[in-house]
Image 1 (spheres, one colour):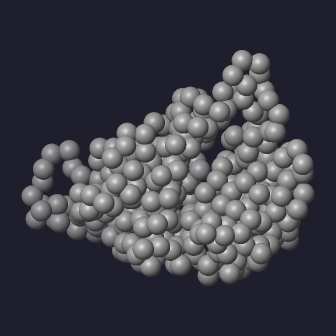
Image 2 (cartoon, rainbow, N blue to C red):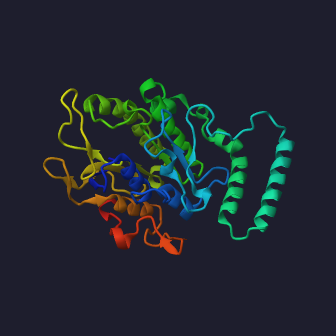
Image 3 (cartoon, helix red, strand yellow):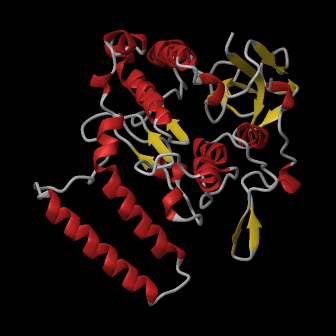
Length: 347
């Protein structure tokens, strides 16, 4: 009853790279801020000891274009997505290689801040210098906060089981979902989770054996997703937390290959779902044609999805602007794309 299913999504490119960049940044070419960076820029963070934007990628590897999918581009660097790892240290290079007494670390940080400010005074108006100073200061505050945020030993056995941490098949994605809930609880504005990464067999890109491929990956994420939604609802967090799940495109309705047939990329009609955050749970919006090839009813473009997400976060997508190289830039560029808030999805 919590899900708002959209069966009429469509995109503009059938290559992973361009389609992923479009889904992440609103354009098919590299060099623009990601959705999470725009949200960070607009809203900031409620916890000064954690980033506003955190990425939990698949520990098996990066998706196509890797960290470029959560870049800040020409927004200040503080709005770039910060990678948290679900294996080993949560944030790389956050702690010194050798133990340093607390008073010495404090002296080092104070001296670094003094030198940074002196350098900045010689180059007034350099936004990159201010962003770098802020990132150093945030890293210092994160040294304890990040470790605590991902410490799942604080969670009850029942909660860990709810997310599937007791099953090797669901443990990895369940860990990311549970960490996401803990981060949102602590004031992180935007958390981005990935399923699939690295080698082709570790992704959803089922050009062969679609039944075994999607069966495997669906089994990895289904229980953790249900656990996350159940947990958010039981804590009274779902109304204020928007959950969006989907990929850069779908798969074609006809087979590809003869042995263990798969499906090729289909950007013309595919499904995504939303939950919580003021969406209308329990409905299905839109439809594809009778073949399942392209969206034909209540079509929703990626630009519309971005506009709707921003709207539910209290942001007017037509007014969220950053001047870059003399041009007022926006995520949705509505005069060009025709992006709209999809009111049919909202309660």
